[in-house]
Image 1: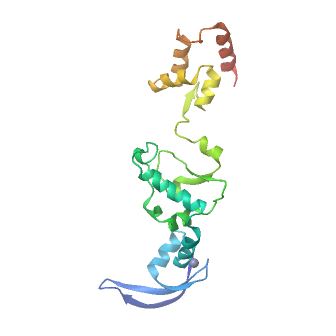
Image 2: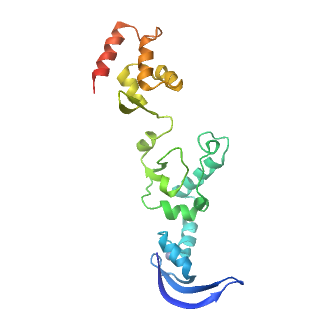
Image 3: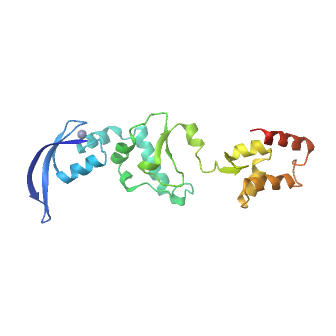
Length: 213
Ligand SMILES: [Zn+2]
């Protein structure tokens, strides 16, 4: 946040329009500097907490730290077109985060050494709105391969469907991947002549599980 201290006379930059200059103070580090008024307004509107002096200082101090390595890591992953979970799938980093300074400005609030960066929507790219710091456990439950299905009108994790239906994960997965709904997949698996699904013991176990809520 920059606080305008004084408005200076307008100045003209390299033949362009006249711009109002101001002196402003960074409320974080106390550094006073001359800015174009419009840039100060933009800076505050975007909720930026660090001025140029803060950023220069930060960059110097933070290279090699964990948060810096996280930033470097996500850039690598998204640039690697061979990586089918990131770059190869079109997951990008927003242009603002091309520099560590902006990434730090956006993401340092809420950061802690035991948290990892997570995309809220795993099909969307890395940007301020789609990223948050999460514990490893929260992160695992949001992985793309942890799919959700709707079974008997209830949205649940695939693991929960496996538990409820009593059928194996693979048995359900091949059916879901064929385009069946969870209800169809369970019904089809139950009708299957293969595997252990027709063993009376397993039928009883399955019925018991499916009656549980
Ligand atoms: Zn500052």
